[in-house]
Length: 206
Image (tube, rainbow, N blue to C red; front, side, top):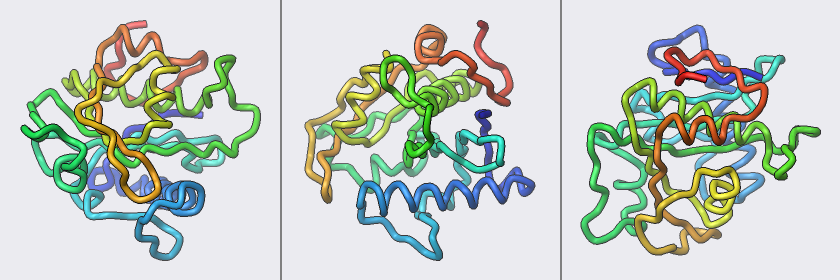
């Protein structure tokens, strides 16, 4: 398995991976988590995909996407500030140039034999490491995200605890929370699993 960073507008040769990612998102968000998301022809896609985000993708040997996340600079339009402002404190999202938003994180947890000793899915840790590596390489030091209480616990177990930005709030069928995550080489070394392999340039030192 390899971790890639892809921007659809810059990498037309990766169109098959982008399509595989949208199909994975449909399976996870609509069918597994039962979120109220729009599915067209078996693919989940929203307005934020039109902003030329960077996608962090976990790609297996069959060239199928088994994990993904979407990254957008926090100084521009973000899902957290625009779609879920109720998760933020009264002053809103205090965005700065070294902040990036992560959204639409998901992993194909149906893959067998892919658990770490701490019972976290290895692909999840690979994705965490890829997000951190890309963020460091591109000059970011903080990640913000809207997630749920279950995923907040996963982050803590992985050694990457999230600082809450506001109070939990019911959204659809889940209890959502906004949070901030630090980006640095110490965290990268802590969450990076054995066998981590990426094609992201300028990786932090081993």
